[in-house]
Structures are given as structure tokens and as C-alpha cells.
Image (cartoon, rainbow, N blue to C red):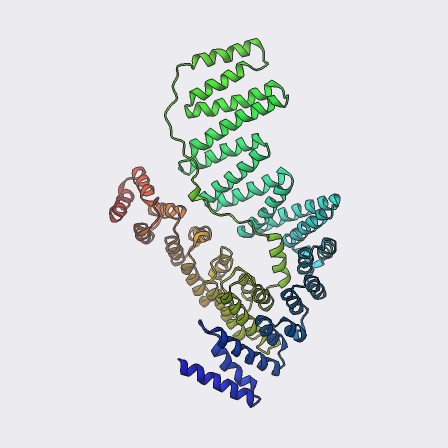
Length: 593
């Protein structure tokens, strides 16, 4: 291997000395496109590769290498594209100059973000306003909503509250419309992004926006059968409602969470009913403290009594009657409440264990700056070179990611083709998959629109390495593709993509696909996901699946590592009979449980 490397390096240098850079490049690619390359060797090879591209009159590729090597000034002198110049200025710590270059390219969102980072909020506002008027956004309610959101924030920073309020209201309406459109097309992941932005609007502003965002997120999570995410979002929203003093809303949320857990046989119902009752008591006391009519407090106390009664918490019912007996009500009603309190004096509470939603089942829910990230993605337009250009100059990415982004960009810009051939696009898709980051998905989605089935198949092959929920947008399209080779690559992707967030799209594929092979592939991947929700679905398949599916999930349940699986299986065995019960008991025996 070492001899091969030395020989390739010798040949590359010889070709360059002979003014044959086009023949030097394949040798250089064989040297840089390796899993492990010593840094000093990589730098030397890239410098020679940059010379070759420059001599072949491919300055964008040559400048890309210079920027990667940290020679931003040299890259800037060679850069012909304004977006490339902008990245050089960013590397040199000159955001204002970067904004000017992005402005020249018509990338007003990129430019505005640079000005915001430089503290020039007035200039950023002008650019967001310009982008908001872009006619291309008329058919893009989602992106237009994000732009209006950014505009509202810029106006708020400048103290222009009226303009900020107007932009925020426009943003809200656009995002609601976009969410409806995404859901109509079955793109729940994108609708979820809309509601995440509405959550942010609510965190900074009106409770109604917060409620709309959370309730829609909860609805989508319910529809996708992500039970533990549903409870996490309930809990987050409940906490925010309590912080804002929205006690009636909080009590309603506790009741809805209790109903949800009961419907799904989860052990947290009593806890949520207790919290709902306690919050109703808290609401009654708050109303009294604020001087509301006692009859309003009486209604809240009555709701708490109903909840405590259902729980058999008679000591708490007695305490609430004591509070009611002290209200400024008619003598007859107060006497009645006092009698009811006395009647319960010796009634003991019914036994019952209250179990709160445990912290270890909570997922770390990130709230990324979607309003920036997705505007950036829209302006890049699915161009792999532009997308990877931002990755390779961003120091937050590890070296191996930046290097793969470099090779991906060089594959496109160094091809010398005005219009990329299908063969070049197939290679480009492969490079995008190897970068293994979320940003690669937008270029792959664009490439998938190509007429050549080889390109589409390459996109599906690449997506196997991209462990993101959005990857399944491509996978689901591939499963319906008219070309058999593309469908086969999509099927391979279903088998390869098994990670926590994949559960939702995988179970959708299983439930909706008419193809038995696809359904089994989805089940196989679900069986490799270490989550309670995945184990519960496998148990459901034991009850309802066909014989092949039941045999498949029996093996996965027998090997499942989640500690909760044994208890889930025991509960399922107790509720079943016949062949299903026998199969579950056999799994328990195989697990030694």
C-alpha cells in the first residue's frame, strides 16, 4: 500500500512537470480520497491538486482548497463567485464584508445573518425586508413565514414594536398555512418545524401562540405514535402554563395527559389526575386572592373534588369541602359543604401508587434556530457545492467532516462540466452520503428529481448513511419509484436506518406499505431500536401481524436489551390468551425472565 501511494505521488508530480494536470488529478484523488491520511501528506497533496485545478482554469475548485488550508486571503483573490468571497471574509472575521458579498449574490438572508452577528440590526432589518418582498417566496409560505419571523425579531431589537408585531402576526399566519400544506402532503416532519417556530413565538410573546405550537406538536406526536415524546411535550407545556399563571390551561393539560396515559395503558394516570386536582385548588385560591366572584372559585373547587373522588383521595376531598364551607356563599350552601366535610371525617383514602413520568424516559428536545437554518438552506437551493462550502469553512465541524465536505465540493466544481453528467451526479450523491450530516439532505433531495434512475438510486444509497428523520422523505419517495433499482435501494435504506428518531417513519412504513418485503424490512429496523415504544409496537405485531412478521418480532423481542421489556411482556401475557400468550411466554423463557 505504501509503495502504491509513493508511486501515485511520483506520477502526479511527473504529470504536473509535463504540464498534464488533467492526468495528475486522478492520481491525486486516489491519494486524498482515503480514510486515513497523515495531515502533512494531505496538505502537500491538496496544494498540488490546487495547482492542477488552477492550470485547468477551474478557479472555484482551486480557491476551495486554499480556503480549506486556511489561506483565506489567497482564496479571496482567486474567488470569482460572490458566495465564495463571502466565505473567505467569514474565515477572516469580517462579517460586514461577508454580508456585502452575499448581498451581491442576492442571498439576503445570509447577508442579514452576518450583519446581525456583527451587531448591525438596522442593516439586517433592511435585508430581511428586501427578502420578504422576493417574488419567489409567494409560493413558499414556510420560508416566507421564517423570513417574517426574522424581520419581526430585527424590528424588536430596534424598538419598533408596531412593525415587529405586524411581522410576527404575518409570520404566524404563514407558518400555520405552511403547516397545513405539509400535513396535507404527509410531510409531518416539516409541519413539526412550523410548530416549533410557533413555540418560539409563544415563548417570547402571547400564551396563545405557545399553546398553538405545543398542542399541534402534541397532536402530530400522537398521530405518529410517539407516546413518550407526547408526554414530554405535555410536561414542558404544563410547566410553562404554571409559570405563566395559566392554571385552568395547566389543569386541562394534566387531565388530557391522564386520559392519554390511560388510553395507552401507561402507569402515570394517577399522577396526572392528582396534579390536575391540585392545580384546580390552586386556581380557586388564586381567583379568591384576585377578588373574583366566589362562585368562580366554587366551580374550580368542584372540579378538584371530582378528580380527588375518582382517585379515592377522600382526605383531599374533605379538605376542599372545608375550603368551600368558608367561601362567601349562601348559608344553605355553606352548611351543605360543612355537612359533607363532616360526613367524610372517618373515610380513609383508597390505596394507590402515584408514579410520575421518569426523567430517564425524557429525550433532550433541542430547539434549533430553524428560522435561520432553513432560510440558509432555501437560499442555497439544494446546490451541493454551496452547501458543502459553508461546512468546510465552519470550524465547529470536526476535521474529518470538513475534509469530506471539501471532497464533495471538489467533485462538483472540479469536474469541468457546465452541466453535470449523470455519472458525475452519481459520484456527487456518494460524496454527500459520506459527509454524514443533516445539511447533505437538501442537495440529495434536489438530485433525486433527476430523470436518470441511476442518479436517483445513488441518492437512496447515500441516504443510508444519514441518520435523520428527514432521510425518510427520500426513502418513502424511493419506495414508490417507477424504477425497480431505485426501489431496491430504498428497501436497503429501510433496513439500514435504525435509530431513535427513525421509529416514527419506520412504523408508518410498516403500517402503510402494501409490500410484505418492505413491511418486514421496517419491522427488522424497529427491532434494532432500543426504546420502549419500539418494544411495545413489536408486542402489538405479535397480536396482529402475519406469521412471518410474528416470527421476526419474536427474535427481536428475545434479544431486546431494554430493561422494561420483561415487564411489558408480562403485562401482555396476562392480557392475552391462546397462541399469542404462548408466544409471549416462550419469549420470556428465552430471556430467562
